[in-house]
Image (cartoon, rainbow, N blue to C red; front, side, top):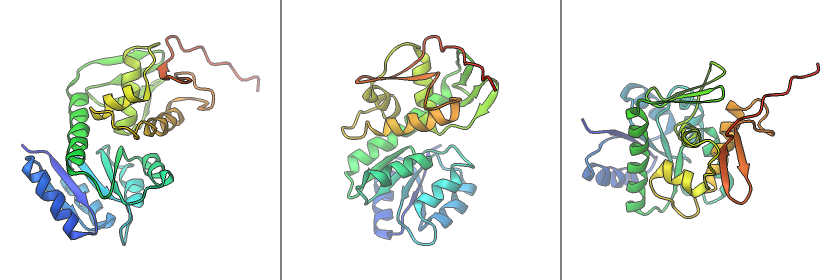
Length: 236
């Protein structure tokens, strides 16, 4: 059965262009004109991936991600004409997994679509559990727990955590992590890893400013602490 991609953009010609190339690749394609319409379609269709414009009437892409990320782990690739880093960072912080800046290169867009879908497929197919300290990652069930408490992670956050936990103590560069996430290390996108790691820390660390699990190795990248030190008890 072909994988389904929901294309959300208020420009009909752009939707038609993206549909044409995606269908040439064998994907099933659905369309929405704005975030509000996309919510109804996504809830009914359960797509495998969403390509999402940010600036739309009625409901923007930002607002769509804010709402939909609470309901589903479906990966989202933002399509944005904005070039400011703050706009991209905001989308990533809200739960999007990647972005492509308009006007985009079609082969790159298709490569990113394949990479995200491949990542999701690998995560669903692997039967292993990763256990380090009091964190457990279920690769087959795509779930994570910290001290037996479930943690809601985006697909990108989950992939980063799983990658780091496969080899505690090993330093992964940003490009290493991006390659594990996307299949290709696109120049200029590695800084998005910092955003994902920051979001991940807020979800698994007691004090994100003093991380116990995910350590920064300055000038090199990140690693999962080989033996996370015990947390200090508060005197209060």
